[in-house]
Amino acid sequence: GPAGAIWMQGSTLVMEEDSSIENIIGRAVYIDGGTAEIDGNISGITGDNDMWQGKSGVAIHVRNSASATLNGKISNILGSGSSAVFVVGGEFYMNESSAIKDC
Image 1 (spheres, rainbow, N blue to C red):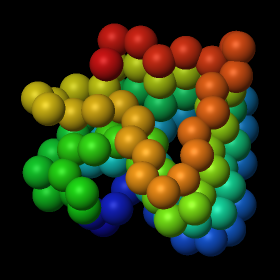
Image 2: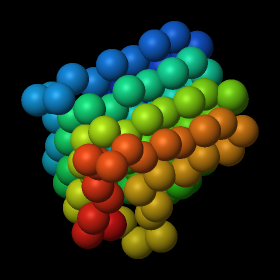
Image 3: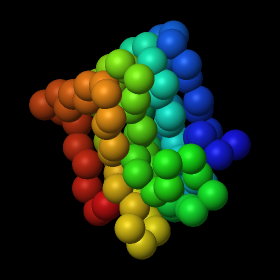
Image 4: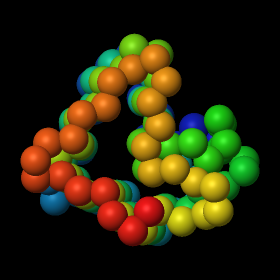
């Protein structure tokens, strides 16, 4: 849908270490309230004008008092004008083992 491959509203998401979201057109994770622990990898995601809130937060979009923690990796986020992570009214944390590259 226009929100993301994962659209979470006010609950808890745990993306496990060996999991991945890759090679899609649209957004990977849309976090609308609640908490998310991203331990897996997000790569090869292409932003698209049909997504809600445009190309802001193609890998991870955080809003509505949500909190997201990245322990995994984000890479190869594509699409002119796209941002890998976008936060409005929420929190985003990156731990030492995490990485965002080639975005």
